Length: 553
Image 1 (tube, helix red, strand yellow):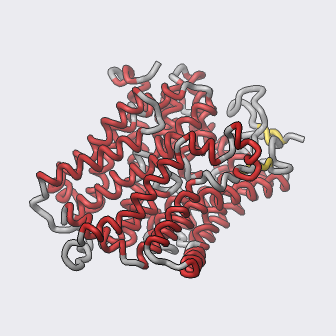
Image 2 (cartoon, rainbow, N blue to C red):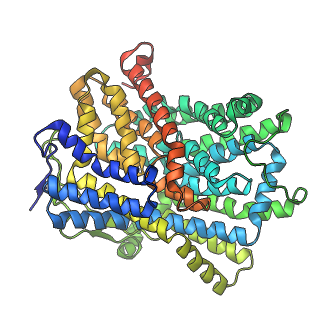
Image 3 (cartoon, one colour):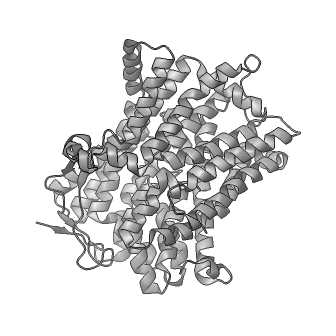
């Protein structure tokens, strides 16, 4: 029997919206203000979400519990699988003191920590976002910046703020291609529209990161590097998204940004090289070329493998979707419809069009094609090259598992919470509240994307949650559905820095676990401010000439 969602259970829109917001308020309040440990906060938020879903929205208890279990499973795989293995790889390099060599090789490009932060957090992080996503760039860049001498809170916040503008095209364009599948809108038109919104912020974000790290004086001292990094990313981001598609945007733009900054540093160095915050650690004089190659080897191998793993042809092969491997698909990529939940929940108008199919609940265990598997393979190859014995690798892996156990619990609880809000309809209640804003809908609709990512931790998931609603509401309001679909993704990227998943990844990578509340407080208002700026741009594109000429028809 199918359970029908309803979005005003109390018969009063304001009261229903307040109740629907309780899980989010409890979660963020516990983390940021009550300073409850994040994994405990996530469990509290999940409990509140279940109480609201079952007690107020009338969701059958069995469906609610199955929904939570389904979300928790997704949190552990593929997301937890990525975190576990990237920290394992990181720990191996630390054991062999390769991170210190990496730090000194970067310092060889420039001794200025402000430029190092831009190069690593923004340029290199954007490149990794294009390959992997799912928190991987935050984990890698956060760990790198710790080795440059930054404090854990600094490194966590800077990595999160920098990992925004590239997110909509992350993981080989999955957020945009998913948005196209959900809405039925043309994938190239959506990519073009997002490519006419985010490049403005690709120029702004490096400057924002620099100001947060070093103040306005620091920005004045290194503005050529900041401008180079931003423009060298923004221009390819626009060109590739508008003339090719969403798949290679971040990879091409990130590589161009790295190359441009490195080229600039050959002819220019900041006159004022005084560091901001704690000074970088000083080691012996510059490492040899052999040491540098050895230190960069794991990350170069990781980049290459993530690129290969992310190619559609590779995924097709590793998941047994080729004609000659079809018999292996149940082993390589088993798909299990969750009993009692699959197609047991039905979204209703205005969130879903009449006749929409019930909500699917299928768990895909693509263990071989998963990004985390590529990272694990990289770690094993790296361990062998670095002289680790099998027993040492196993011991290090178990130690890593112990280290991230609370992070994995947090992610499982957070994804369970997100699933409960989705399947119970509380997310749609919040969305409809923002949709009823009249002529200001372009502004508030963009913030809906921000809210979706803040809740789910994923621009892709936010597009799944609210993509159809954006399309339907835009058509009812006489707006371009392409504009508002893209706005959901573009606005969503600014919510990436405050979702619990990203904060946990940052805290784990920088050794700051247990202080996630401090990280959230450190980035919250930056997230709000940047989201408002994206919303203002979308409003101008919807209502004010000449910005309206930018809208894809």
